[in-house]
Length: 326
Ligand code: NAP
Ligand code: F7E
Image (cartoon, rainbow, N blue to C red; front, top):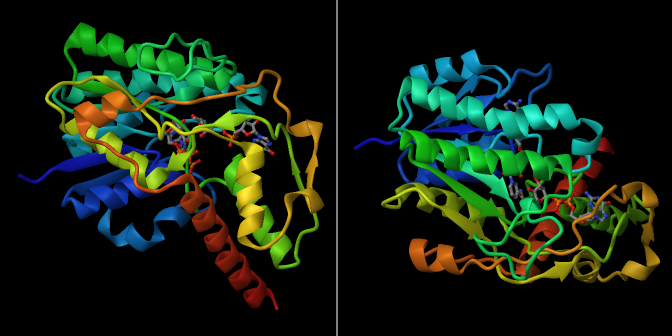
């Protein structure tokens, strides 16, 4: 039977990895992107001909209904969001509208067009914020620390509420930080690997960061999108923590990244309080036991492999840019 998936947020990091995974599995893949004055398809240029892109916006209910009618998906992956935590303090209303209420708009569109569509909601470890226990599991209480985290808590609960109210197949993946060479440059991992590559190639002197002691459970995006798919193949909808079960600090990430190119962090990294947050999430560590036992999900890429992969890809990209510029 041919399976059809609709991915919101297809132009983002996870959208690109998930689209590739679904194409490999034989899905017909549709992606939703919002209108912009410049091209934002950079992450999916290699599969552009294999997928269908449609315009739509989480802020526009009618566009969602129309899109579901047009594409008739069997599975919908709601990855679109305002996902950068610092921006959620400068644009809290937009973040609430997109990252929070946007989920209700998707659920309402599903109800209206076809309640049999299976839906994945991109929930986040940011919901645990000021952690109430360690490691965090599916039953750990939430304590979000940013407008982004608060909006994700709303998205999480509205997904459960629609599942219970209308019997929808709607599942939350509580995903811990996952990174890749396709990660946005403003997130700390990519900021570091891009900075390290530029320093190594002589086009940058310093790398200015915020809280070096923050700890995260970092995994590889390519591994994590597989968990999203597995959730929608399960017998029943449910909520799952997706994490590696291993924690590292921003400082450790930096050390490995600089080591990869034979340099020392102390010679290049400075702390700039501009990158501190009004309320910080100091530590996150997930327990992926449920995803492992019930879905058979396991991450394949280690922390060290992830850092090295990201540094190496940034080195190659910047080398190409330098060649083109000279
Ligand atoms: P990302 O790279 O920032 O991608 C976000 C996507 O959402 C982009 O395609 C963006 O489009 C789109 N978008 C933003 N506002 C929109 C709107 N109003 N209407 C339609 N599309 C809109 O994020 P990601 O890292 O791939 O993460 C995917 C999802 O997982 C997000 O919901 C994020 O909050 C969540 N999450 C991420 C992580 C992580 O560590 N990566 C962990 C937990 C949860 P443009 O290209 O036009 O900006
Ligand atoms: O920050 C610290 C910063 O912006 C990680 C999103 O995908 O994952 C992501 O959110 C840590 C924080 O990711 C800099 O203070 C230090 O403690 O890479 P980040 P995030 O805030 O954890 C979750 C799971 C999501 O759901 C989100 O969508 O690193 N940090 N110095 C810095 N962070 C940044 N961005 N820049 C710095 O210079």
